[in-house]
Each structure stands twice: as C-alpha cells, then as structure tokens.
Length: 516
Image (tube, rainbow, N blue to C red; front, side, top):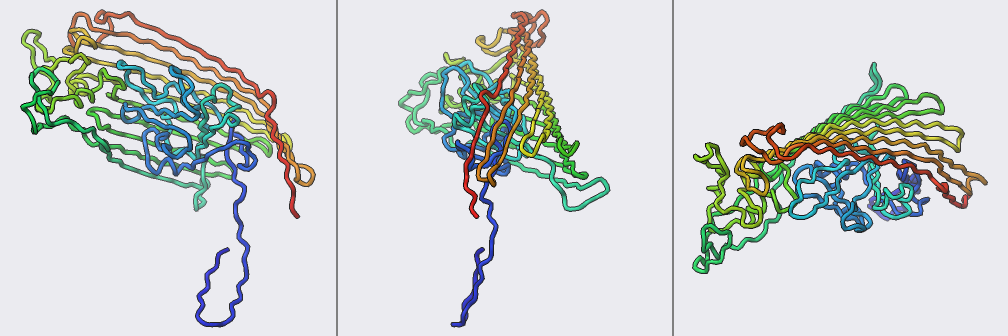
C-alpha cells in the first residue's frame, strides 16, 4: 500500500509496510453462459461494462462500441435513428451473404434478421435488427469473442464472431423496509446532433439551361448561390427507471425505458418503449431459478432509403447552386386538369429517379410498428460440489406491421398516376432450449484442476409474412388494397431448425503449482 510522509527534519522515520489486497483473477462470462477465469482461457476475450455503452447513448447501443473492440469494424446504416448496425468481427466472408456477428443474450443466441447491408440503387430502409430492441441501461456487460476457438461452441452460427450480452440483476439498497430491501434508479439524457462533415459543393458555375441540373455555364463565374437544403438538428431523449428489491435471498428487478428521437432528415422519428422484469429464486439448497421477461414497442417513421431511389439526400446534394432551393419547399401545386395537388419539381428525374426532396419526406410516408415479447427461464441444479446441470428455455416472438404511401404525382418509376400503397405484416417466432452439465474438480491439493462441459441445444425459427398492395388503379390517393391495387396479395413462410450437441465434450485441463 502506498504511503506518503512529509520530511521536516533529519529525524529517523520508521515505516511499516501494510498488506494490500489486489484482485488478480478476472472472471468473464464466456460461451453458453459459463464463467471462467481470464488466465484459464486459451483465446482472447474483450469485456466491456455497461457504463461503456451508456456514456454516449445511442438508440442502437451497438454503435457505442465503435472503435473499442480491436480488429472489429462497426458501421451504422444511414437510415436514421434506430437503423441497423453492421458488425464485422472476423472479416468479410461472403459478398452476398450475412457477415454480421452473432448476438447472445444471457447465454442464448437471438435471431438477427438484418445486418445493415445494402444492395444497389433500389435498396430501401434498413431497420434495426434484433439486438437494437434492448435497452442499454439493462445491460451489465458485453464480451466480444473474436477467435475461432471462442466461437466454436456456437458452430456455424458463430462463424462471424460472437457478442455476449449479460443483463442486470437486482441490487441491494441501503435501507431495509417492510417489503424487503428496495433501490430505485432514475436517469434521463437529451442529445442534440447535427451533421459533422458536409461535402464541398461547387458554387462557381451556374446553369445554362434552367430545366437541367447540370451547371456548366462559364459566364456565371463567382456565382453567389442562394443555398441548398439544410438539415434540421436531430434530437434524442432517453428516460430510464429501474426498481430493484430483495426479499430474503430473492433479488428482483423491474425497469421501464423510453427512447424518443427525431432524425436530421425531416419527419424521421423513432420511438421505443422497453419493459423488463427479472426474478431470481432460491428454490432449495441445490436448485436456483432465474426468470426474465421483456416487452418492446417500436415505431419508426420515414427512415432514409439506403440506395439512390427514394432518398431525399440525392436531389439535395445535386441541386444546382444558382437556383433558389426555398421555392421548392412548397412541394405540391394544384393541377386543374386532375383537380388534385401534384408534385412540384420542374427538373423531372434527370434519369436518376430524383424527386422533390420535400415530397419524399412530407408527402410520402413509410411507417413500421413492432411488438416484441421475450421470456426466458434458467434453472441450475447443483448435483455435487463439482457438478451442476443447467437448463434454459427462451421464447422470442415479434410482430412487424408496415405501411407505405406514395400519393398521386409521384414519378412513374415508383407509383402509377393514382399513387402507390402497400401494407404488410410479418410474424417471427424463435424458440431455444438447451441442457448443459458442467464439471469443475480440483485435486492434489488444488495443484490440478479439471473442467468439462457436456450438453446439447435446440433452436427453431419460424417466419410468416403477408403483404398486399402496389400501384393504385382507379382512385387517386385512396389507399386501399381492395380493388385499387395492381398486385395480388403475397404470402411467405420459412422455418429453420437447429439441433446441436457438444461433441466431443469441451474439456479444459489446467495444471498449476500451489506455492506454500
């Protein structure tokens, strides 16, 4: 232990060394929820506490890990607040496939139906993937497994690397009441953001033809531009409250979190509401149980398309510097021939599918709503002092409803003269079960230790999709799939089942010498 003494004279000082306890053996949660000492592992792991991802909060907490994991590339999509995030841990293995890492919550893999990827000019919105539903305030720690040895227990699922997420349990308060020991945590944060880097536009040459985007007119040297479109400041509010209580040996926790955000693109909004409950029970001297349940409500509006089409940023960046952008803020004009208001955009699409950016953000709409329910139960039975058996069950169901509206006046590439309407509903169901026996035995006065894990798991994913809509046929701006769209309803179904066994057993032998 460090000591400081002020020397004021030449007197003799008597200093006695004092013992200081230091934590030398760090323990991390590895694959299948098994806790092991870092020095006993044969592969590299990186662990991050929950404070690391809540210091700079993001609607998708994975973005908070950017630049913190060695050798890992984390890219957020440009769809706006709540968009998907692409995590590449072990390099790109497939050009067309999914290279995203596997997410494991409390030892159980979760489905990740999105990866933040894009595919050409028609690529649409990339909404948040399965992990983005979680409230970062409910996370205790995150462990990154990058090497092949670390991810071997997850087979092909873990081929791209694994991110282990461990959620929080109840914590004791400072006072004991009639109903046990209670602690309440409340937090709030507000973030304001604006584009960090803007492209450099040429403001020297103007238009030779007012109907063209091209600006090649030499006579407009030193042109004074009237300005392009500007981005509004983004805003994000996050509120979180957690209630923890202990009654005897039973820790419980309940939390409520909200995230309400507005993006830097007009009418791009994101709302998420999280409800989380966790209960731990000591059923006997040998049997413990852990129950958790979560409900998430997600809603996003007018997220930005990833490709060239239906993207309002493209016509803004290519807008001629000599024209006045403000006059296009009134994005529609009354058409006396059709007796309705249609899009005002004299430039047409310029062969690039461009439209008035205000028409894209204000007249058109794309809304999606997601309800997600997750429940899990973990039971652990201690057979002997060196052998215990753990069984886990998890159910993860979600329902996604989406709706797209494009009014009359939208260019023909995206709608008919009457408009476009589409609605859809997708149901995802995920079931996971596993049973694992873990052995840890020390012998010869703790000079030798033997660890082994043996078990199996079962996972089933099912998706049902139903969609209808298309170009409107007869009535302008009448958004109905009954007798007013040109495409028949579509139905999709998929089911995958994975059965795996730890074979051969995962043996780990550590040999050490006991100093006396």
